[in-house]
Image 1 (cartoon, rainbow, N blue to C red):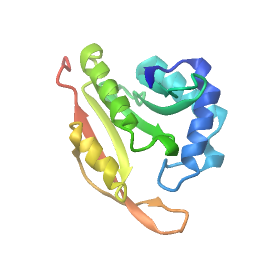
Image 2: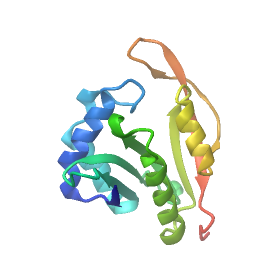
Image 3: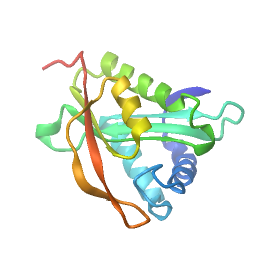
Amino acid sequence: MHIRTAEIDDLNRLKVLYKEVARHEGGIARLESEITEDYIQNFLTRSFATGLALVAIHPEDPEVLVGSIHAYKPGVHVFEHVLSELTLVVHPQFQGRKIGRTLFTIFLEEIGRNRPDIGRVELVTRESNEKAIALYQSLGFRIEGRLEMRIRTTGRTYEADIPMGWQNPNFEF
């Protein structure tokens, strides 16, 4: 598997990947119908401008993406030191192969080495996603609260979102 910085030419491949992940409950906080070209274009444009976006390439087919991570600055001056809206997706057939961990590790290493303007990376994950919470904690994220009844499942039940944050050890105040 090869990991590289995302490019605008990845737009259609990212759309295919995100739609596949969205088909599975709990895979991403979007319905498949919400994965549009505009959605992908928006997060790519914002990630290129102020954040970071990486993709993982299928080991046998370079035209297929098996994972992606991105985050970007919220666009408000008081949050200029924050990367937010972090999203990590791994194709369901490739989960459990450390692709998510590898993407996240490279992402945080890049921020630590080359983005001294970023002091904080934040994300939110549903409470039932215990594997993701454990992964994020193992990478240095801390649980920072609990947002009750924030996620409505397709079964019309509700669960909490768990906000988590990571501090860049190389942040320059």
